Amino acid sequence: MIKQDEKLTFTGQVKQALLSIKEKRCCKKAIENADRFLNENALIERENFTCPECKNAFLRGVFLKCGSVNSPDKRGHLEMKVKSEMNADELCILLREMGLEAKVSKRREKYIVYFKDGDTIFAVLSLMGAQKCAFDLVNTQIEKNIRNNVNRVNNCEMANMQKSANATVRQLDAINELIKDEKFDTLPEKLLYTAILRRDNPDLSLTDLAAIHEPPITKSCVNHRLEKLIKIAFGE
Image 1 (cartoon, rainbow, N blue to C red):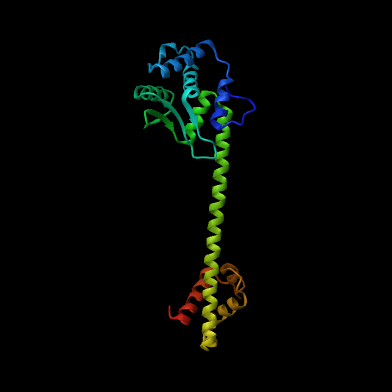
Image 2: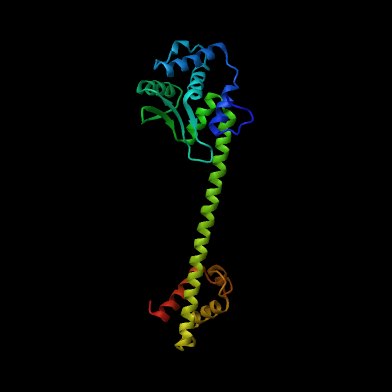
């Protein structure tokens, strides 16, 4: 029996939601059918499915008996652990009739009927009647994806900033090398102008550096001139 004051796992929350459903008489029989199916290694008694909800009730009964689902903050996984290959095959056929494609694996002496796709797990939970848990799962996955995307963007921005900083250091080293070799003042007029602007504005991006040229030039033009300075200074 699930205690109300007990801190539940996500599987516990799902099963608590399923146990709270008020079953129709025919759906109660479908759940009893699920018990026989699992306990006696029997076939699914489809002739007892007399209303559109009976299949859902049967699936509910199976999950209550042998099902589990990962917490929303973990990788998606919902499984039902049955005794025999026949149980697994029968359950997969029923799930296929419900529009759900399950996979099967063997773990020790049990057969595991499972889903890993988030959308399918959402559908399974919803069909069983645990709609709130299904939406909690989706909302957590959305939040997780947003956090992951933000982290990826931040990491990309940090990498670009580091790359830009390294390039600027290389440009300043080239300018200092030209000054040391007394080649700085002999540079062509346009290269000298760009070199002076870079030397005096080491923190500016290429875009901003291009904008302070008179007249303004393009970012690619600035980059080309700075690459040329590096080539003259280091012979690269």
